[in-house]
Length: 583
Ligand code: PEP
Ligand code: MG
Image 1 (tube, rainbow, N blue to C red):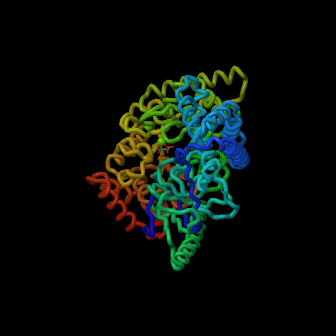
Image 2 (image 1 turned 90 degrees about the horizontal axis):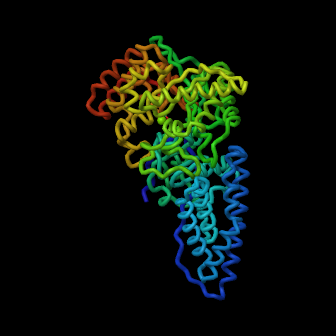
Image 3 (image 1 turned 90 degrees about the vertical axis):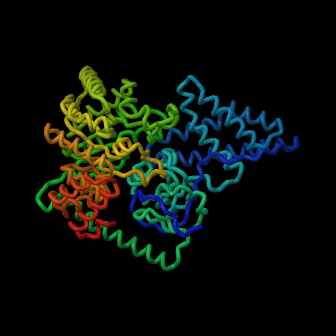
């Protein structure tokens, strides 16, 4: 085994710690027939496994209540209910009585139930499939005595590195933040939502390792370097000492960057760039408001929904939005309507789609379910009465979507007025420019919206036809491809000519070379993860916009992304000499 595993840097920081291997997948079950005399013993094994699973689920629920809240923790109660279902117990019992081992009987029945629920015409039952899968994994792992299937069994302060195939929303909820210090996944890329979540949680992370779960052993001491995107698997004493030193240096740099974060982002030739924060998790608002950000450029509301079994009601949503608005008192807060779909899914009940990123996602799903959409819109209009709220519509490809959304916003305002609820009806409405269609049509869309928010994570994916979450394609996901740069330039120049707002809220905004390119394209508003505010301000303060503009013009004439990157890197390095920018 090589001593170093290379993945993709997803969230910065160095951690030395033991591997906590988590295989959250249904284990293989040997086909064992049992002796008729052993039926009672197998029934007892089943009873004990069910009792233990229920006990674990109750502990997980408690943790989820503390980490996320009662509503989010509800899925674990549902799973306990499944374990206590007399029909399930009766069915597994009868299979054991036909002389199957407890694990075999349970496996067979769960496969039957999952199949049956998945085909049900009732959404309520279809929504239970992912809970059945979780229960399936949990009980089988107990029956088979597999130790690496439990995400919660860690002593406090373990400083463990969670190594798993992919971080699902339900696993995220269960994460014990007092014991997990870093995350490593086989799947994912820098712009996949695992990476975005890891950054929101402030945990160093390496994703896209492809096979870390098979290469690493539970308990093995490793060094995870979230900045370099690597894992050292058999560190020597010298490497351990070096990692600790680099950890200290990063902490020091973090201090410097936090100081820069409190300053204004003004370029060397006097251009002011507004730096805003992306808020992903509802409880991130307070931290984000202290990050030096001048407002919120993107609140991803779908994280109120992922990992939950039911949509939050109007009051719960209002509270979540109001929290952010209050935390950023008086500053602009751009809240995006639900971008559910793609790789951000609620628990269960979602249609299985062959191409989810080209599927029933974001504004499409909302417009098809006007009551669900209006619940969110009413909550947003109510929160808008408390401050400078702006509404942002995701994944727009046609003007019809903007028109329909505006009609529903007007309807929502009338409903609130009829109820006598305080709200603001004339909230500025903008759109995410994250499809080539929106960028190319920017001139016709500009007349109907107050601002453009360029979502480069998706714009790159849809322009280059490269799945943003596919680790195998990571080297083909090139944001500096001249085609992407040209689409951003088109959008920016339309916005400037028409006098509407424009900013970038994708991950490009927080990468030094890419931020340099964006500044060169005339972008004066960048929204980044709260942790990146200092670094981005440092870039702005270290460059001249005239130099950035000349560099990006040259980069756009390049024939390939690699050449564009070379041009921009050379120009940036010549322009600034801060080591902090090369991290
Ligand atoms: C984007 O696509 O760039 C964006 C900011 O939205 P998300 O990452 O949530 O898709
Ligand atoms: Mg997007």
